[in-house]
Length: 334
Image (cartoon, rainbow, N blue to C red; front, side, top):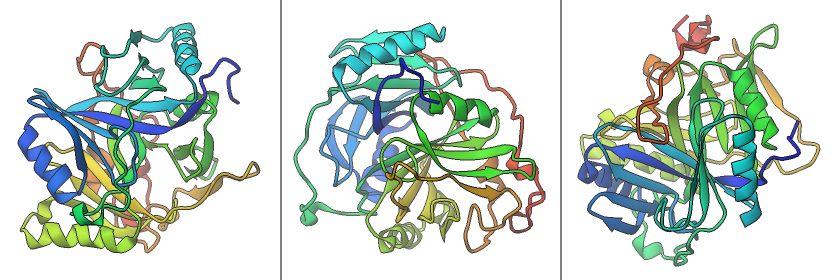
């Protein structure tokens, strides 16, 4: 149930990652995946996809530890930034207000919090606009990334994550559940797609992956072909394949620091007011890969740490329910 004092979240907007080698990160995210550089300095890169008209959807910051600095959601009005500050203050969460020029370059007034799940999350309304690149076919390259699609976070308590995001007004498109309806994973949305955020059960808080969208499945395949042709196939972790959950075509890659990214396309519309949650059983081999292909152990077990508001790694708690521990034929991990 949406809390009456919750901010009106529009969509997942950007993520900021700490990387240990900015040059290597540039090679991966710009040269190979096809992000466009909107702004750069000696310590950071601000990137966006071809469809995005805002300043950035991904910030790469040089740091000593590969980690998530924060994920960010855009809210509908400037007043919703105030509502976010009050909402999380009343929950007893750490809260930091950032005036324009105090926070991320290109972003206006914002509030950054450690949410009840332990994640660093920013809420903002104002962001600089950027040049329209949608029809700049002459500068497309790599996987031709169009936009940020979603965040996937590792949390030890999926029901708590579900309840928190429901209080923020998120809908739920799909779940993975046990025989007694135990919640193993959930996909939740504000924009009218399958998800803005998903929860993977596991030790957390940690970032599982960022999901970035292309327009067509051949661009996903092209990314795999490019990595293979350059003898960089070790960056491919899982796929290409088709998800059961979301029906999207996918490829998972790891950047030089181990940050996981999913190249993702062809999910479905969730904007009808009577949209119903589709529930997968945890023993259905098709849920993670519709063709029943195995999910490798690193995909379940490995993720990157998240930082608190002072830039220190957040402590991690072990999971309550472990999807990978269930006997699930195709996964071979039970």
